[in-house]
Length: 310
Ligand code: PMV
Image 1: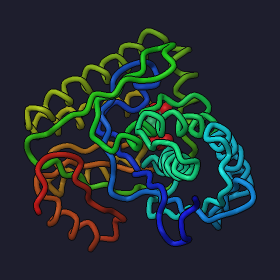
Image 2 (image 1 turned 120 degrees about the vertical axis):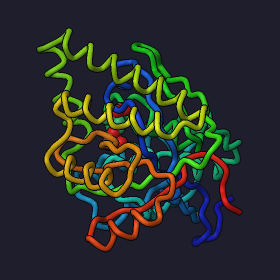
Image 3 (image 1 turned 180 degrees about the vertical axis):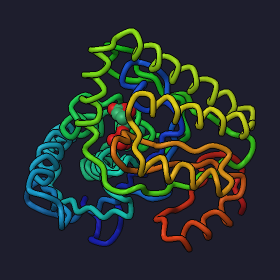
């Protein structure tokens, strides 16, 4: 049965990578958590299984989305529903918007076909959509979105799927996400890094391995509630990403602004490259958020783990 128009049938949260982007593509671990912002899918009865593409997306993205949706619909037995998407997540800046689309569609399609909406099944279907969008994603984005929890994620080289270990922080873990302008696609940035990593193999392998080690240490800091240690891991991770030529003057400027406003650690998040999103770790994000907004920096805060105020 399709739900009434206006009632969300599937939600996919966006994600923020605290540690380990790019290295995760090479089989190293990463730490990522879900945002409160995300993509909602609404269904209504229809004769066929179809997707209404959001307004304002390019013809190329529309075609990719249609292809990705078709793959997900087939896995769910193509239930007779029309799916419409709404998003409050900034698109294509490194906050996992395409994975959130996949998770929202997977949840809505599974529900419409009368199947159990289990996180593992949602992740399996969302991965199919991510592959249509990005080629060979590590899987960290859609796994974080499907599980809706802060995780230590790793997909070993050659493995079909990754492994996610939920991380609990005993103290509130707050971040501010700030936007540092437009960027090129994840696919292009990942390809550029691959070319450099093939050319200068052993040096790039060392840096990627070190990012994985920093992610492991950061995960241990999360479970110990040691925010200073987690912040330092994030700062070092940003330095390593810069060494891999994945940062830019625009990104670095926002990273330093977050640090100047009291971040325990700050780094680019997602694919980076020429612009995108930056994440900063804060004990109390409110004063910094207000000051950043006053100076015109687009930003929001999110709690990724730990006890919440009721
Ligand atoms: O698409 P983004 O910006 O959220 O980046 C995803 C993270 C990468 O590690 C760069 C790619 C991947 O497949 O994990």
